[in-house]
Image 1: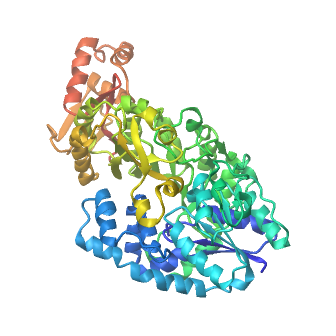
Image 2: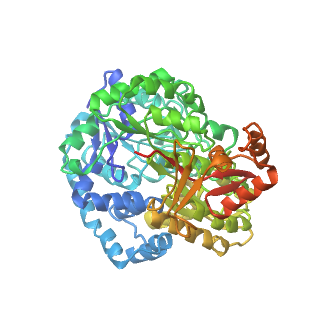
Length: 622
């Protein structure tokens, strides 16, 4: 028993390797320890079909749909029936689900037991001293189901759990409730996991490093009530402060499994890599609703040279020229360092990354020249008072500008609309409903939803201060785990809440939500575009609903003004800049204001935060 197996269960995404286990395997390999990664998510997807697998993975994550399907195959105690789960959880989250959807969802149940039996029989467990499970993407109950079977076959095998579902108190409670688990890694395990594995393989008594808990480290096998102490020994976390010291992730097992899968022709794989951990903005102003970084909010980033070298290695090794960054935020220093290096390196690599919206056009150009193929923007809303309320560090103007500049090149732009923030002013939603039709030619939001209460967020830490009442685990947890409320509170990441002032956001957000639906339905089928001809004529084409005219021609001072407002400008600033123009290219402030306000009325311009922003997308005639 000298090997380690890391298991990636459903419902992890099939398009890219799991970064965490890939880093851990590389770290073990550096120490001469044999390690395999089993991508059993492929096995399950091959059983149920790719479309159905992705449907469950993507659409039911926040209501634990995948967990529910496996839960009935783990617990001996009864859970609420399927009909109640569908009615009280799934329909409550998506009232558009049909009876056919219900049948399709629960039809997956018949595949669970054969999948688990085959997985348990597929390995020579005698060679493994430890089996680790990654628990992030609806993987907790599927992992427990297989862990129980492994323990029945080889009780001496150590079982370790880690991942986002094991962060802090959640991981401690998993250890308390599930006897299959021997160790839980409560946070970043890059250093701790190899240290524990080495001790197990040496046959020594395991001395737990920080960030790891075991049954013995808590209270012994019986787990008495003293385990409810908030900070058991060893529960503190060990962050990796110098990311350059990490090994390159080992993706070989993923690409081997992809190559052997009958689904390979249906999948377009991506590399999954990281440039940083934590959030530099959150360190200064933690966004009120965000719990993504857990307790590892401290921002750390790799050196630009390390990022370029790592990407070059991964692209050459796996022959994949597209990837997605795991980072929660782009390091703002990379605009001067990494992005020019990537452009010069010419890796032929396109990437997706998440970023704040207070960008300049020059920064967008740098991103595109470096290989940006898709962008994930933290927009949330176009109401500056709400953005200030939740600590986003961006304004409505920033958000619309970034969305415009990134919509121009035609790349995929991913962003969401949130509503129902506690203490928001309902009057802001009337302004939003008026603004959104002006933006229908830009990349629409992927999703819209009421803001959640997530663990680790400022909302979670002090709900009353933020206008939230009666915080409680999301109702889905009671349909997956047959435990009391006290246990569910320690295990849950997603929470529900009431508004302390009794409001119902739908009472005032409905017109805005209808505008969002229209925007999504149009989905770039309309345009507001600008062609600046060499003869000094700026031609605007407008095919949006309600457009006053298909074509406008702007010349002289009007052309100068419209082009100058590519970035938001105040009336006074525009007027001052016009004073430097030759005669015939100037305009006094009063008529200038009337011109700009007329354009706002015609929806070819927006007035946001006291500034005017041209909305047309720049086009070049072929």
